[in-house]
Image: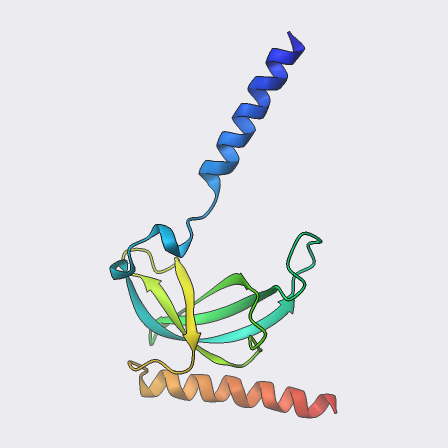
Length: 133
């Protein structure tokens, strides 16, 4: 009886863990996304023992439009992920809370407001770095 119950419990847990995970970018069609401007807010080494020693969790914010800025995070094993770096983000057309890092740099569609916002963020981060010296 307890073996059956344990088996059912393990089966239920594995199914619920598999179905509750977030989809990766590869599970979407690229045409479901548009490119938007973002900036890395933090890039910290992950603390899980199973992670790659170069794995970083980046937290970033990105524009849905000039009046809406959202935040997200992802894990990467890129060395050049640094706080204050402007990035381009892929944002889901139907659900803007779904986003993925695309590349470092400025978006072709960046607006003057977004550029000013990114510059101010970068300036603030540079001042913080200067004050640490």
